[in-house]
Image (cartoon, rainbow, N blue to C red; front, side):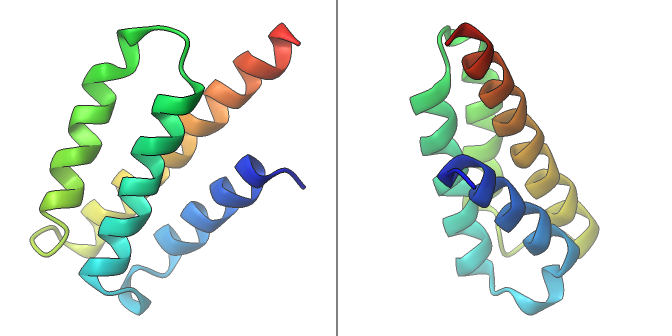
Length: 90
């Protein structure tokens, strides 16, 4: 399993167990998502997504468990899509 695939799985697990994670842990996962997306993207069209994740990371204490779940799943989906695109170019 690649590091990217493992991280996607980690995001999905965290999304399914939001009550087991502190706001700090959620923020760190979102920050790692931002870094991963920035490293993987080939254009700047993902910039708006990165900004949304940065805002969610900064507000990790405020959202409900459902909102946290949704943003973690969004991050996993974006990274999975970028991985597919990049793997297709190789």
